[in-house]
Image (tube, rainbow, N blue to C red; front, side):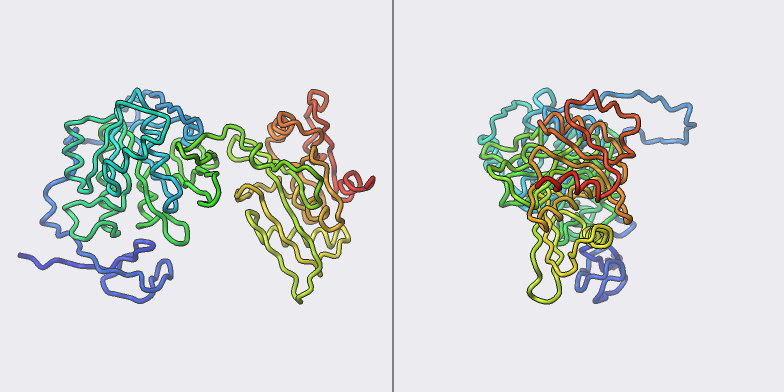
Length: 457
């Protein structure tokens, strides 16, 4: 009998080495190398999923028949948007998120809403009674959702051959184990091998497969980085466990956009879709407060109006603090420098704290105008009317620059009842301003904006 070969794998990034090293050469993490048994070449004579077309041959592109099959539309419109219009047949979707954020609840709820499809929910973490207990709390019921508690992939595929599901959900990929790999469940080798088996099954049968995955302490998906390259779509389920709102974000999608966003609200009966997220991202205030402004951002094709909160105070402890939540700290430093150089505001001796309400992380440069307006409002202690919003980028010269999709931003502000929106002068070209009920105010420079905002206060 041949001696088993071993190698050392990094549990953070999947880098393999023939010998143990203290620091991973790939990701730089310390003490993450774990010894695992490598499968012997003469032992792998079987495969976990038998191929239908055993004899494959090269074919010309013109010989391949292509039919644009319709996607599987679910009752969850937020998931449909994030996936690019629905579930693609034969796709492999990986959903990651922190423990307790609601990944299993989301997938069980989707499985229950697909009442016209035969869904198999495979759980390696919970018993049947625990899943039944969660399903009883949900308002949606389905007679075509079946539960299987199993961790060995070979046993799962035996059940699949008899059951013939139309959609497969695996919770979670870290608990799955293949008999062809001698290492333990959750190791790099097992995660890679089990994912490859489910990918082979999805591509050969056309059955969509959803894999639930854990994330590491730094927020990335646990397991080897190659795992994200193997799947078709990677979704991140984000949110604060102390907050009721959850965000479903796309980081990779072979069948659609990677900038779409889905928002849910967690209830005792499951997750509720938030069709108009701008209303929850803008707080209702009884009295006007300085340092508050509303900016228009785009997430994919969806315009969102979000609240920017700023607090500017005198730095009494030496070096001024610059703190931002949900906004790039380096971009905040740049905007503060623009305000001091081009606007004459003495912010170098001020503490500046910036927060994006709702827990969102904003990367759209169209928020710049709302950020500088919020900072100046707090600095001057003058409030911005609650019916005013902003949509423009700020340049280093203090100029107000144009942004894309300005018509969608204006329409969203008008729909939510805003009376005035400030945009770039260069965005107004080609716009029929009379067609909007909202007042559209084009500005070219920050000085012009501040005069219009704060001159009469």
